[in-house]
Image 1 (cartoon, rainbow, N blue to C red):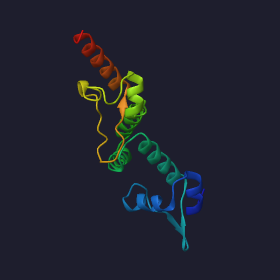
Image 2: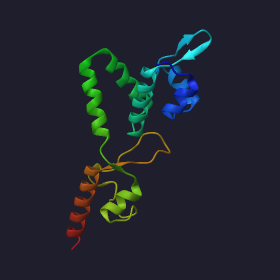
Image 3: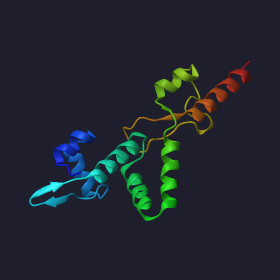
Image 4: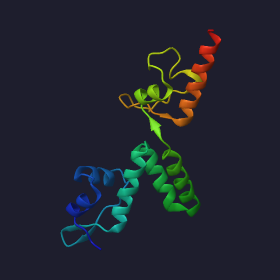
Length: 150
């Protein structure tokens, strides 16, 4: 089925500028043409859904591009992409939620540092994320530090 750009925007929920940017950086193939009109198809919609899914799991556009490129080359790489998507689907928590989950203030000594539990999101201004494993390590470190001070 053929879609206009406005239909792709409506179906994907992704703004026009973002779709064009994805085409510019080659995350999304360019549209086909029917005369002067750009024509998109299910492949474009599927790719946009996949990009959105991976981005919502915290993958950068650079990583997404590398995974999509590899996924097109070999079926074995598709299995890698699936594994990464499943791994990044695990719950993650921001600092405030992590503090509530461990029942300690984010200002408590050692929170976010114990056992390397702090996860850097990379670029400045991004929210730091913590996994369930990070919270287990922080709880254990805080318990052992509380026991040691007795």
